[in-house]
Length: 197
Image (cartoon, rainbow, N blue to C red; front, side):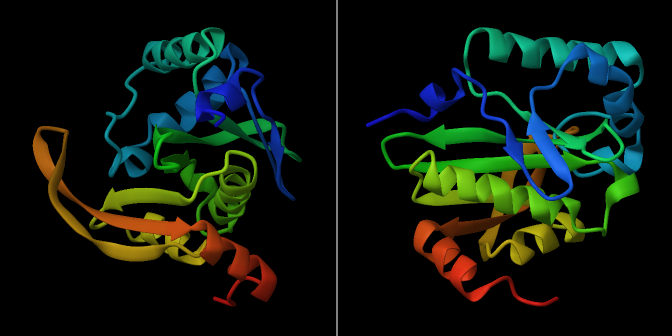
């Protein structure tokens, strides 16, 4: 059985109608900093608001190291028309034996409520199920993060419950909502077409 890490030894580039999912580079530093410094964007993340370009550079260095050692690293979400980085998406954890993984993502608030992240997540789900052979894909969000929960619902994920005091972030234990989708459900959604919202 092929491990998920092996699929990232040659980093997979994915396309959607409006975005290109590709490696993050130092050239993305300004674009990334522009949204990572926003308290609105980082409000429900596990990472702190970036205070300077050095914070962003340090994160990019961490990502580049992941690529260098051929580990699973995040996709940078590039806006095709504007040729700029507007967010990122990644498998933040995975279980090869049980063929499941968890997704994490962030998007510049300038592109919220325009369907960008829904578009991206659908493509990554397709890749996860069809290329990686996953059976279950999960995602979590802070209980108050309505926007992220809506993305999960629009991509066909089902709410499974609240994980109480599940993560330690920003000085406190946080409750999170758990969503998931399994391969059969995703295949059915593709056949029927996405629900109109």
